[in-house]
Image (tube, rainbow, N blue to C red; front, side, top):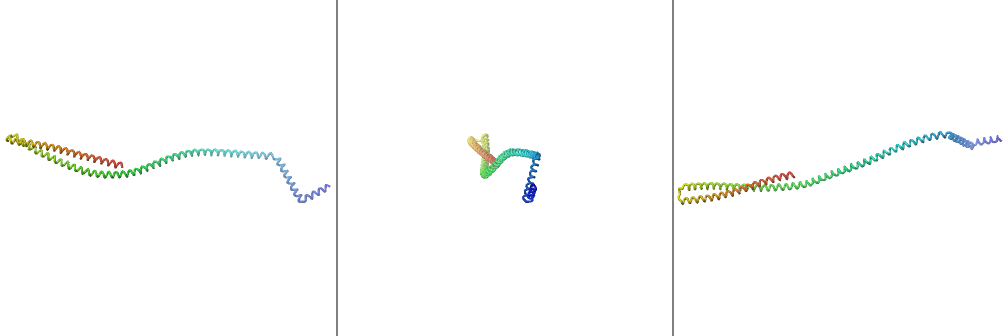
Length: 246
């Protein structure tokens, strides 16, 4: 019986099924051995895993700390940037106000320049008119001055003539007075001479009155000439002032 069992077992082992079975049996034996080995080495593997986990945890903690520091640095940069942005905005606003003030100043200067240019044109036209009026008045003044000087010269000539006539009359009066003082004439001749003396005296008084009137006219003409000269000086000063203002 035992021999039959061995024979059957050998036959089974010689077939393909036996080979597959043997392979499965060997794999099972290896798995069993591996399981047993794993069971026998389990404490040592667990110890290595704990070390690796601790190492990984340490790295994660370091990385977390590094990222936290980076986050703090980024937040600090953000705050600094916001502050700098606020400062920059304030500087921009201040610079903008400065630029607006400069632009307004330039615009005011341009407007003043344009107004000044218009005023300058008007002033030049007014000055030209003043020059023309000055020339006209100067011509009229010169003509009037010439007439006054001619009238003054004429009056002075009349005065000289009157004074010469008065001198002649006084000489004749003196002569007649001498004749009266000589008492060489008769009464009729004395009366005639006395009448001539009285007539001469009246004529002398009349001539002297005429001389006084002529002298007054001469003085008036001189005053008119002085007034014209003063007016000429005033106009000249005004023209100089207008030229400076323009």
